Image (tube, rainbow, N blue to C red; front, side, top):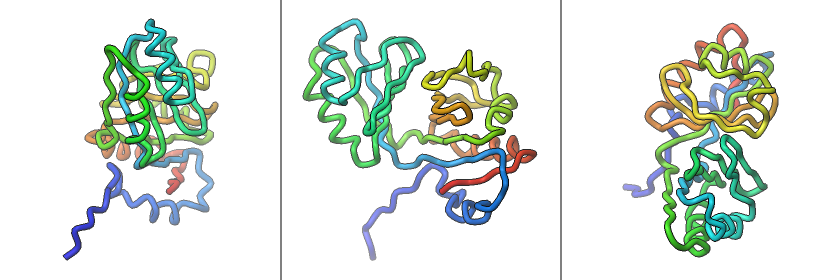
Length: 201
């Protein structure tokens, strides 16, 4: 009997690999991908404390975004501003432990860092009709002037909640809790039906 535990993403049951094969030649207006098994770290601290912000930058190699609804990114890390004293740090899967260790080694005083990788996932929504899908799903104004590339919002998405980062004019990363991932997947299938949905594995 094998004791090897195989990790499963929140949307493993959707079999994205099979769906990607089925939809690969589809001329679709919407693209959907689960960015599974990334490292997610929740960071809390005082953005007005120079020792805190400089410590984070030293640990991560990128300056902490301190303006509301902003983000910062390098080849190794993406940081989302969640609130005045809270950030989500996203790294490659398997890098979360060393990233947490680097933060703890460079920070002192009042701060908190927690590995929340198992509790959420990221869904990438893209394509020429992705904004039409968002208009069906939430009340937030998605016009590029109001929601520019790099902006982070916390919003109600249909009947769930998520944090969303705009990464391109028609590309969005949605951070959703594990327990709501299946609901979002089912919703997005229905909301995308009229535009055609291509799944990326």
